[in-house]
Length: 102
Image (cartoon, rainbow, N blue to C red; front, side, top):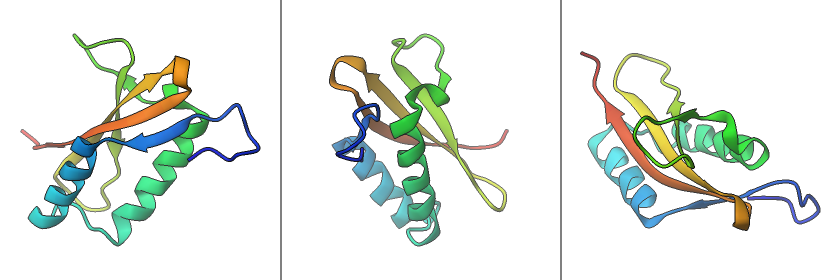
């Protein structure tokens, strides 16, 4: 995801779990592949520049963070979980979680 000319950016990679979560969200209808794909690209670019922009998760490793995925209308709330590997200058998109409103 990083530009070859910009060594300050992080490489953003999707894990197999993230890809499976995305496919499942599309199948179940809470991810719209047309509009949400553009939002995902926006987040990838943002994380390439500012990987620390997500919130820390309690009781998890310090490098694991979450960022809310925007919803134009109502539930469900979706979060993307990702990890930062400083040594590799990489961000790994780990999972997509569907959070129901209580």
